[in-house]
Amino acid sequence: MEWLMALDHNIIFWIQNNLVSGTITPFMKSLSWSGNAGKIWIFFGVILFCIRKYRRTGIAVFIALFFSLIIGDDLLKHTVMRSKPCIDYPWVPLHLHMPAANNYSFPSAHAFSSFAAAFAMVRGIRNRWILLMIVLAVGIAFSRVYLFMHYPSDVLAGAFLGISAGAAAWYLSGKLFLKRKK
Image (cartoon, rainbow, N blue to C red):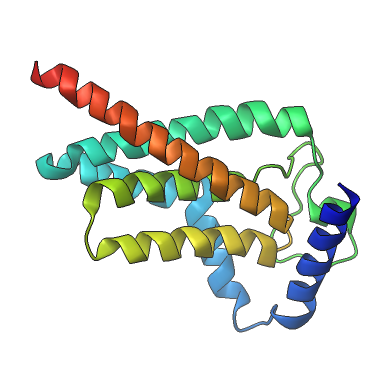
């Protein structure tokens, strides 16, 4: 476990020392904001739900977001209770408001919800929008490390959990649609 913490530390401080700039930071803040409470993914889910051809995909997005809320925010964050890097290293300048000490880091909810919703959409839309969904999920997840809100392993865990949740949501949405057609 110590090697993981050392790797997290090395990566996040390398990003802080080499990538953080006044030019990129506003864009990263916007990406992070769009992932707050799954805003952007709820928006896409509503649009997809309203289009008959993509209704199953919209339902899968909402199921995936529900999984990320219950598993990530309600269960894992309060079980693991890992503090955020901005709490561990308060001297590092922040570009966002300092979160409460009980706003835990593992797993990254932004990464979890983004990858869950994006994976549910990728399974359902299968067209040129796939790349956009993946890039958006990666961007939102990376913004959390860039903005010193999560360690890289928090984001990576959130991404893996999100992909699993997205796959499960896609499967469940198919079961719901099969029941409706009978």
